[in-house]
Image 1 (cartoon, rainbow, N blue to C red):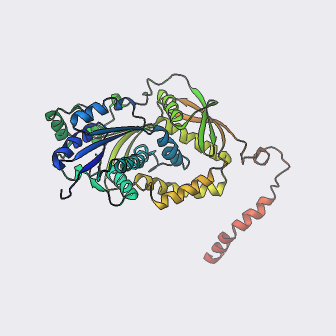
Image 2: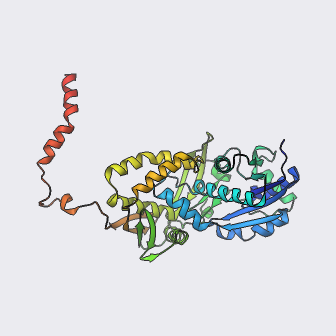
Image 3: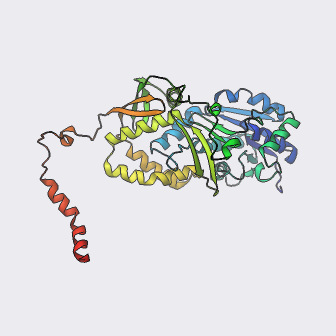
Length: 400
């Protein structure tokens, strides 16, 4: 232990880990503990936060509605880049952690706390994401990471501790999943999912219907973009939080947005995770379609070459890094003309682009047509090809 702590702000979800941590901090450090819970779209999970935290010993409880800020300042910037990690993961947890860390540090300053704490394990990515955020904001802050200190080294032991201390938690021995939910997604890890061969139980899913239960008729929707951000759905203007909420509902009812992956954690191990990201899946597909019409080829290719690195920055916890901010500025500059409408068809897990249109379109039917035209001389292609083949011809002559 070794460090004297007077007052700590705990990132508190009300789940198994942080409920136990709240009691453990009080018992271990004899310190004042203030809990902070961010409302980023987990909904009903917040209902019992305050009474449970106070009952367990918190001196004060913060519950802040950060839904609009989460989507506007974290989800939208990432989706302007079509962000994706290892080809599948849309970074739902990764994008939420820097916002939680930012607000947690603001509360620590308001309350004069000398430490912050979180419930991330010593094996996972979230410990890195939280702590890089804390230290980027205040390098002098003390950090308590109970999973790296205590001997409560399994979720079964944590559940026994909770039962012994009368702490109400939503986890049970029957469903011992570690979950994280926000407006962008819900994730599941642990339990039977630790065996990569074991199929996810159907009753585990929360945001999406199974393909059997999904709507039996396709549904068309239209998403409108301004400078890379969605601003209207089916002609109705929506703010960021409302937009993602409605896209989640639409995508969820059609069984869109489930993935089951084995990913590479930043700390070095592989981890199996199951994710539901219905609205984000629709948003990314529509944004790609909008860019196909409005984004210059070389700008698109240059931006796309940076997406894996940009996604790794977010996944690994470097949201507040200068390199992420530099790449973000470049991405945002590319989005000035990404404006217009995309029409999608949703059906049984599929999201299919049906049409796209834009006043900023770079597509020219007159140039692209297979019919007779008066704007393009096909003979010009001969010189173009011969110039591009020059180095290939020289290389062939040398080899002969």
